Length: 83
Image 1 (cartoon, rainbow, N blue to C red):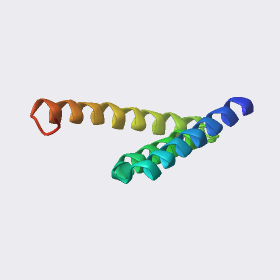
Image 2: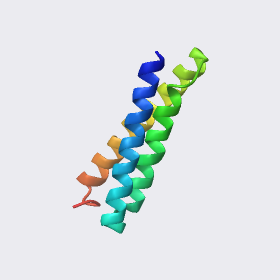
Image 3: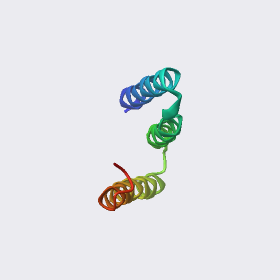
């Protein structure tokens, strides 16, 4: 399990670097990059938890945040908020 935790953490660090490179190239994506970094940190942090019950609760909460985020985006897109 340690190797898997290390790989997930390394992958998250790689994508944080990608987000930072995108911000350096185009500053208008800073908000999206910040949201991506926060989500990556949350997911990578979950892998280092020891308590299974707390881990399950956080995973479920994060899953619902993602589902509701997609639903909000779809609703906003359907209403013409996003082009």
